[in-house]
Image (cartoon, rainbow, N blue to C red):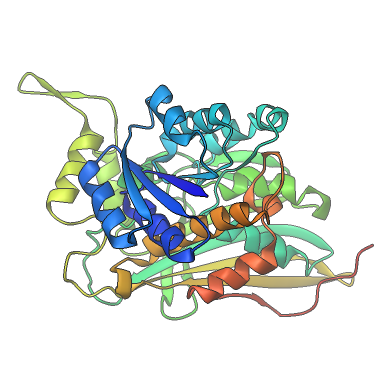
Length: 392
């Protein structure tokens, strides 16, 4: 069985390539990337079962040609390419998953449900860390409640090795888009836009993150959870995040460095997003610096409020995302790539058999998924740990 990772040389893609190569379920893992040097590095780290393909996912014909005959495709490229990658997977008749669509792209991906059903193919948008682990945990925690009034997902991070906020462990372009695009929350049964980085809240995360200020940002969980939990009566769903570097990212975004609109520099067009990426790469600010210690952590805290046995009740679901020094990966890199690789392996094993475009909370069985996360160093918990309510 052959697994293809689009963007396999990137920050999260290289983690997925390595996990898939180590997992032993896929016979071959292809790191496909527009940057040959990064793809080669990812394949070398992954071992002999990994190979390399030069690929720009925007080239539909080349992408379809590469995907034909594959058993699964993991799209680790920036979310702006999700629709193109899905179209290629559909044409090549290959099951598909990605790491998230930043709300609006996710909703457009869901519109392809009919086409994937007709092709009898499964596509799971947002099966990474957050979204992904967050979605599956939220719905698993909702089983503890008869009625779910609200879900607030909070994500915080902390780097114990350095105080510098100048590092990116996932797509800088995506992160900057989160900083400037209006946040969307689900409130009173309807979607409402809020200013980016609004709703500042100091929140006490479990160790090692501790007290951190979190803000509303645009994210994919509210795009699907309200529908998935409609029968539970969900009326509010909100995402917040925060940690070192978020204020700096806002400043970079406000300067326009996340834009894909060229600016004239001494008579030559320069794309700010491309310039920023090149600069970050030159300064070794994409992922951990070579030779530097890796000790950053991320904690997800999902708070659900509702009723149990007719009384008000609160349930929390947690995930702690560690760095992975053995592979020199930061926490987010490792968690996103690992969650995606687990999802791909579940497809290869036949554990995910659905058809259509299905969000992770409806596609992925929570128990085996959480067991695989724990086996790979990512613990999750639901508190209080009570048995689920009996079926009605």
